Picture (cartoon, one colour):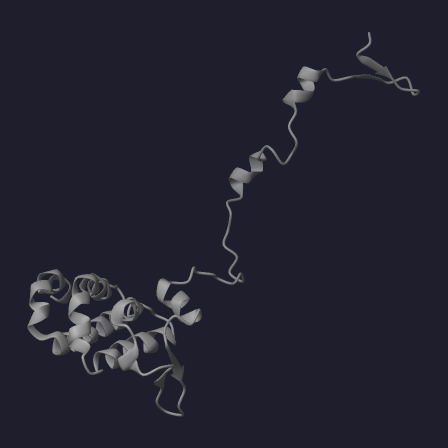
Length: 180
C-alpha cells in the first residue's frame, strides 16, 4: 500500500503512521534504563557554594559599619563612624546573629562588634528595648552544635547581662535551658 516505501535496492520500508510517530520519544524525554544503575555522584572537585548567611551577606554589602583591621599579632575593628552614633536596631541584632558564624572574618567581626557596641555610653538604654528580639538570637547561638559558637554566645550573654542588669531577668527562662 501507500505505507510502504520502496528503495532502489529493492528493500521495502514501512512508513510510520501519525499515531506511531506520537508514541516515539526522543532520547532526552525518557530516562535510559541504565540511569537507575548510575546514581548521581558528588564531584569532589566542584567548588562548594553554600548560600551566604544573613550576617555575611549584610557584611559583604557594607551593612555593618565596621571592618576588620589585620594587625601583625592582634586584629581590631575599625568603625566607619563612632559606635556611639550607630543605631542599635538593627545593628546589635545583626551582630548577635553573626555570633553563629563559623568562618573568618565573620566570627571576629560579630564577636568584637557586639562587645564594642555594648561598651558605648548609653548602651543599656539602647539595648533594653531590643531584649525580646535579642534573646532568641542568643538562644540560637547557645543551641549551636559548634563549641566555639556556643562560647561566643555565652560571652555575649555575659556582656549583655553586665550592661542591661536585672532587665535580662524576665528573659532568663528562655536562655537557661541552653546554658545548662
